Image (cartoon, rainbow, N blue to C red; front, side):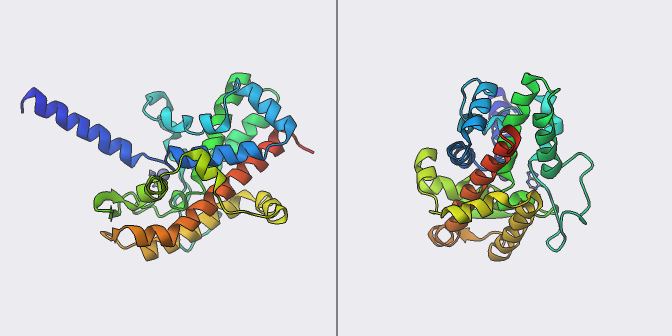
Length: 261
Ligand code: ADE
Ligand code: ZN
Ligand code: ZN
């Protein structure tokens, strides 16, 4: 192999690996941050603003992905998802000894609530929490272990080869071609009573809602399916609803931490 071939191969490897490590794409995470920002109490908003040095929740929402290629953070890789068999609840499912998204969110919350935590730790774990509450509302972040939450299921999206997980992280959202602020302004309209109910749902329900949605997605998307307009039309409402719910629950969690009543 000559030098050119080797460097081309290397580039291809980097691209393939970064695609398989994708999350709700950047747009999805920023929408969740933007919705949460709009639902913070004034006191929580002020404390968060201080911790983040004025950066918005949308801005910090992809930090957990940005640090992925830094070896010092390798132990955080399993914190982005949980794998459960389709018919088992989290409580009874076998746990990953290296942690999962549930233990990750609990760890972040514990550190943020602890008066002994340093400002630096609080800032770090706040950025992670913003990201993980987004991730867990992408249904395939609560998918099956055997196909890595859909990463191992190849599908075709408007003729391009991708996988089921990436389609739900970013393909469906990117096809819509809205910026994160536009998409945040065009989520389903929800009355105050329903918003409050959504904001009060306990964390384990978030997991099981995602698992139920993932079960439907698996059923409706066979491997090697050729997907396009019809699939988008059938599933984009689920994406919009999950982005809204994730944003509301992120706000509720941050209000509980930074402005407990
Ligand atoms: N991302 C990487 N591995 C995953 C898995 N097993 N489940 C969900 N998301 C993942
Ligand atoms: Zn993902
Ligand atoms: Zn993630």
